[in-house]
Every structure is written in structure tokens, then in C-alpha cells.
Image 1 (cartoon, helix red, strand yellow):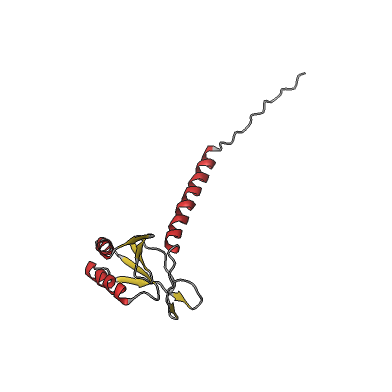
Image 2 (cartoon, rainbow, N blue to C red):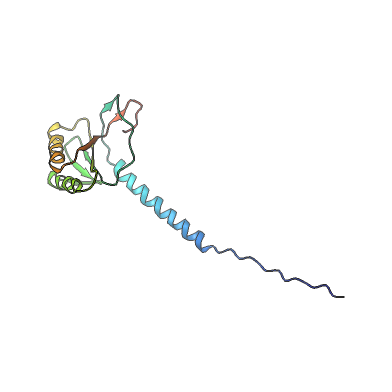
Amino acid sequence: MRIPTRRRTTLRFSMTPLIDVTFLLVTFFLAASQLVKIDAGERVDLPDATLAAPAEAAASNRVTVTIAADGTLRVAGQVRDRSFVAALFAEAGRKENPEVRLRCDRAAPFSEVEPLLVACAQAGVRDVKFAVLATDGGER
């Protein structure tokens, strides 16, 4: 009597979806790290604050402007003039819940900050926040 032999079927594992997900994750983290570098790459000496609120997650319609000690305005790492920034505030003011975040160097003259505050008011942006250093050293 002959014993029937069973043919073994091999299971095949498809690597294609795993590779696709891996490349998507790599792309996401590269893009996210570039966005963080743009904001953090603009070194300014922020003022200290003892009653600073914790930093919130970036809003979808947040405009961040960095004001250097010499009065240079930077948006997303690029030097811009006041008229460009005012137009940016006006565009943000047309969106829902606009927010402006000003990263001012402690040595920046107020004469460079005041026109930005006026431009925010004219654009209807009421949520203006200043980035500061908390007493523990973290940016808020």
C-alpha cells in the first residue's frame, strides 16, 4: 500500500506593500524634518518670560515671522520686506481663525515690531502671539 504524499504549498509573502509603506514613512519624516529646520534655523535671542504659556501645535493657518536684531524680517527662512508680510497677514485674515506668531529678537527695535502689529490689526488678525523663552529654557 502506497502512502499518499501531500504536496506542500509554500506561502508567499508579498514585500511590495511593506516597501511602499516604508518609502512613504521615509518621505514623511524627511518633509517634516525640513519644516522643523526652517523654523528652528532662524536663530534669534528670544526674550525671557516667567508666565509663558506652553507652546501649542502649529495651526493650519499660522503665519510665523522672525524679526532679527537688525530688523530683518524672515518668513519661512527667506528675507522679506514689510509689504510682503502685510500682504501675507491680509491673506491670512481672510481665512478662518488666523494666527500670527512673532519671533522677535530681544535686541530688535520696537519700530520694526509695531508696523507688523498694525498690519495684523488692519488685516483682522486678532490672535497674535510672541515666542518667548520660558524660565526652564524652552521656547514657548
